Length: 160
Ligand code: SME
Image 1: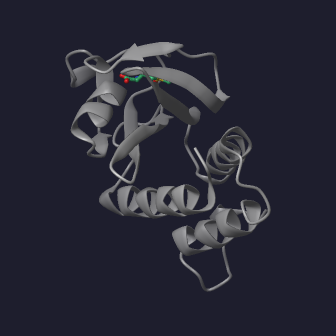
Image 2 (image 1 turned 120 degrees about the horizontal axis):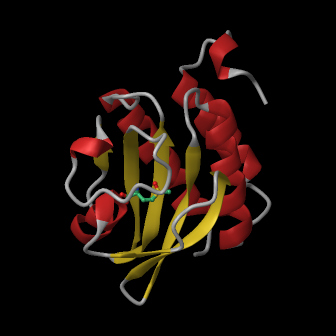
Image 3 (image 1 turned 30 degrees about the vertical axis):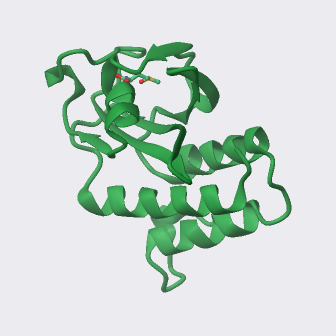
């Protein structure tokens, strides 16, 4: 993997990550395998994360899927937390300070900011991708656009 902090390819970091993800998922469509690869790519290539992973929609609850980081909450109700807000609204939640959000679920008290992108295919909510950081306001609007584009690649190349 190319170190994004020393990216001298001429591509933006997200263009490079997109190319890496395309090639990583090119030969497999299994949901668990591809989600595991995607979580590992993000956790290792995006600086400043302490958690990167998936929750999948199981009967109106979010169930923990493949992730990198410390052990996490296993089930999250749709009406709880930032992940639940992403699932309910089907809108990306970009939160600069999670402690300022009523209902935030503190799986890891070290997390200070969070980006949660819903996974939606053919009108169905498949789950969410959750990224956490110990840095306040770690995720910019550019990060949001970049990660949403990566999620679109994952959904195109994966059967979940
Ligand atoms: N903080 C999240 C819960 C999931 S963990 O951070 C891995 C939330 O409030 O939805």
